[in-house]
Image (cartoon, rainbow, N blue to C red):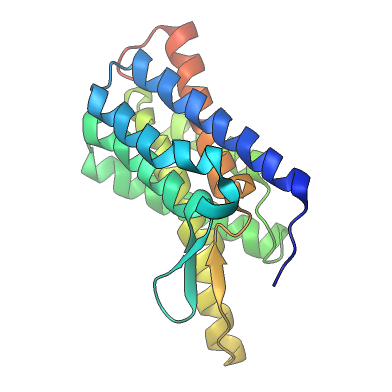
Length: 205
């Protein structure tokens, strides 16, 4: 069993508090229904209070685990944004494909199957999204960034390694918990949306 340093839990709380602040700020700015904020708080507050007990990994198959704070919580949070902003299906499919491609390239070519460089991934995805798509659908970015990392940086490398090495091992998606690249990418994207709304004053973002 991996022994986690005591101060690591403090940093987990800090990351979760940043996520909470960013989500609520964006939700308020974009006039989200109250149920969205309440659902988010219900899912997040327990993990802030006791990350040691809440930030655990859940088994979906015998070999694939999803950490609550590192994968499930970011996925839930980004999905909540879609519930009240609306899903632009053609655009979201293209953005998800783009994010998976970017995270896969960063994982295989530059990161060598290690933790994705969050800043590089975020900057690449955001700049390409703004260049290719209308700025009004950039609110899809949190969801696509999260899904892109889950699939492109974790699941695809796992399946490729399993196929090539013929040696199936367990994998934990979001294993660094609230400090994982998935959670950090979500914080970055929400912060970007907040800044765009404030400084560009575009209500559709």
